Image (cartoon, rainbow, N blue to C red):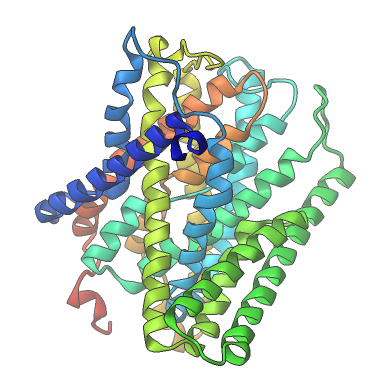
Length: 454
């Protein structure tokens, strides 16, 4: 009876994914013993490597055309990212987050806007002048889409190093807070640019620019309001409705209400991901304290486990897609696109990522320090040059950028997806693995030293 209900191919792929997750977890646990000041194993990089190795059999001449490539972007945005962003909001260190909220807000909102627009317009002009291929040279829309998805930072490897070495709380808070808020902002910005006209000779008038900005602000504020509303509803339910709570019912409520907020916001044309993030923040501040001690601990561990699994599966799939980008024998499957890499496109994109990040991190840091300098009580809150450099260095790209690239339509997606994959690989492997030695080189406080008052 089960064989008639369960598709054999789906069952096989599910078993393969579970085995890869188990192997990745065991391998990561084993490699942790070799961590030191100059080397730090990262679960994200390990998952990419394992995913890459697991794709090798599908590039043999006798491989069957049954790669699991279809609809991953739907699975990612509907099931995986909500778990990641909810846990980010729910586990947020609110004291450090709100202490540095002005800096986080400026980096995540104004920094993301600047990076997206400058990168997008620059790519458009590079394509227009035949320096690169893979971007529409007659309309800036496609360039802006690529710019917005590349503005989504995802420093998983860097934050893992920060957490393990117990770096300066201010540095951790700034990088972590910017990354989670930046993801939500980048997604809203991507959706805003995606709603622009598709004409080949597209020209953005002042009224259209104002309309796009108003939509961006409206979606952002509406999404935050939805998150606060559902977070307050969760606090009310856990305080007034659950008269005889137990861990099972508490965890069910604490996980279902934020996911409902995600679905409701998305159905209303808002950003469900931004909504579920702020819902997690509100629930952590109010609803969490209505739970029993057992329910509180169980909710924390379940949310963290779901987010960790979502990240592992995403990076495994990411590694699985690398080989088809460079080996044509992997592109022979039915309905499989023939990817092409333009190294000029990749090189210019990497350069723009570094330059645009520096272009907003440096002035925002100087501005904040100038303001804080006038208030003697805020002397310790000023951002040091070493901290500013690490914030710039922590601009890794990851799961959000990859998943957004899969949603881009048109002929140029065969260039855009490989470019995004190359940027993610470079930033995670080169920058991610350089984090630990760079912290030592810059003499950034770690461990007990980081907790001492200045």
